Image (cartoon, rainbow, N blue to C red; front, side, top):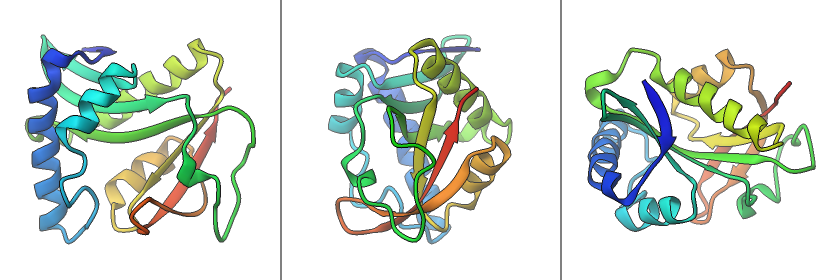
Length: 168
């Protein structure tokens, strides 16, 4: 498996993964990633800014994630808790695994690669949010020792639960 920067040539494969993840959320009654989010323009923007990464298996794209060191406006205010740190941090968004590869713990591999990428770039804090009903993502974060920090509200006003991990 290879973890690498995504390219514009990867967009259609990434979107296939995201569309299936969106359908899965909808079936489970989770309103995360609905209303045409994330869409192709967002993924292209991720790639153009250098935020987009893919996990591949023999050149087949099997996972996607966006990692930014540019902060996150919606993290400026946290409710019912507080962040562990106040300095520089990475933000992780849009983790998705191909339907054909679910159940193989690939989200852990993606997050371990994200953590190494952060360390390689001198960033030792990662912040992430997820929907309160997205139990699989919460389990991943808990198993990887991310700490629950409180609630944030995304741009459309929806509540998300927020986590942070300080890297060694």
